[in-house]
Length: 258
Ligand code: SAH
Image (tube, rainbow, N blue to C red; front, top):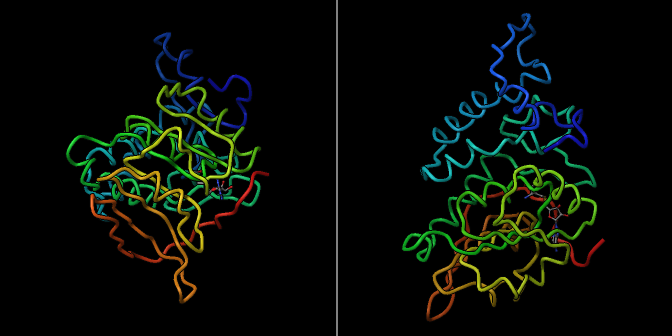
């Protein structure tokens, strides 16, 4: 729970136990649209999130699993308190150390692409490797649709931030690792899905090696014309197939740990 630092995450689940004492909800004074009281968020955010889910569905996300996961994970618990009112808008937000949490529509799109892998369609999504834990939001979403999630972050500060953001959720299938994601994480593989939240110039060979047959890799990658595009690579018995999808804007993939 967020007892350690409540002001940073207003209304995160820590508030709920006190509400469980069956007190009727206090009637809040009228406030300006979009302004919420700290204690109001834990309860009101479900409705706000549902509206976000409706927008995702209207925008083309079809997987019920993905929509359900997006409706469940409290994105406002992963951003600083000053940004909480923007948490359910379709926008990327700063998470410190010059990094950003991806837009909900991009998270949903990439996770849906992972679920489209032949192996995932046949038997559900198995082990997933995420490169770029950031604040931990996407790892939480992945934990709802995959059996195991290994998430690597190269910045110690963000790795620690994700740890404290995710601790209250007690997601037993999420494994946070500090390291250079360009090397993948062979011990957790082979992976049914590999998803990168940072865009590189070329696909690290470690990712291809650690991708399971029937699995999919979804990553932003800079193309020859300098434009960053979303790439989907599928591994088959005979080799790999690659599709280049829409343009995206991700922070750069960097090597080494800092
Ligand atoms: N999925 C994240 C988005 C984080 S932004 C979220 O939900 O918040 C992308 C992250 O990738 C940044 O935190 C950046 O530090 C990290 N990153 C960049 N290159 C990396 C690498 N080689 N290994 C691991 N993480 C990397």
